[in-house]
Image (cartoon, rainbow, N blue to C red; front, side):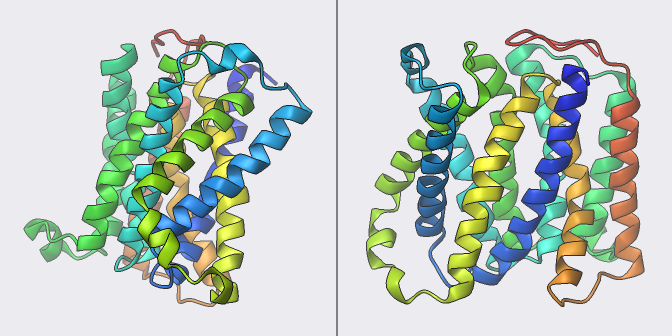
Amino acid sequence: MTPQGRGHLAMIIFTLLVAGSFSLGSIVANQIAPLAITAGRFLIAAVIIGIAALATTGLPRSAAQSPWRYAVLGGLFATYFVLMFYGLKTADPVSTSAVFTLTPVMSAVAGWVLLRQITTPRMAFALTVGAIGALWVIFRADWQSFRAFEIGGGEIIFFWGCMAHAIYTPMVRKLNRGEPAVVFTFGTLVSGCVILTVAGWSDIRATDWANLPLIVWVSLLYLSIFATASSFVLVQFAALRLPSAKVMAYTYLIPSWVILWEIALGRPAPTVMVLVGVVLTAIALVLLLKSEEQPAKDAAPVSE
């Protein structure tokens, strides 16, 4: 399999794992403070990734050069996760995941600003189709709400988190200096954990950890192991092999995965009209993946 093929496979797995965080996150969002649970997931994920790094590539001293890089990346991803939980306090999981699918458009802009990655007309068309599909889901197929641009507060909060995520993707390639993905991920997680602990210390101390409901602990472990540790490695692995817009293009799969998660958890499926938007996001993914792509080089601009 080519490096680009491995990058695509990594993102398919990423979308499946991340989709679960929307459904589980909506269940526990009002049972624990966002800063507290996010700090916990970063801590657990950092331990897991640290062990994995020691067992595989090791932690070379060269990786500790310019630690500010990890602070930038950790701050961006911590912002995304915290705002996701704030958004899920009021927003529907499918609707929230649809907001997440707007990140390819923002990532394409960030990729051009930071790396001068070029978005071709075909990619621009695909991104537009995906954005329309996402908005269709966000507004729940209500044309009147769409015309009035009435968006829920939870979706607006999460949108700002998605902006941080979109910037994070090209920043991985810009700041990576040849470190293996697992090592770079460990530095990012440790920095994010420190930032979250400082920012959310009062919430962390106020949380009655010993008496949290079982579902909160189950969600925390899932979020830490699969939606944080694994997804960090997968995104960074893919971001070093694919252009930023294509990495984030896979987010168009997430609403479909979330719907399956919701059904599996016993919740009703969305209406047929809402599913039209999901289909549009899937079409956008196909269009993006069919666009011509030149081999991506680490830490270098990519033309498509």
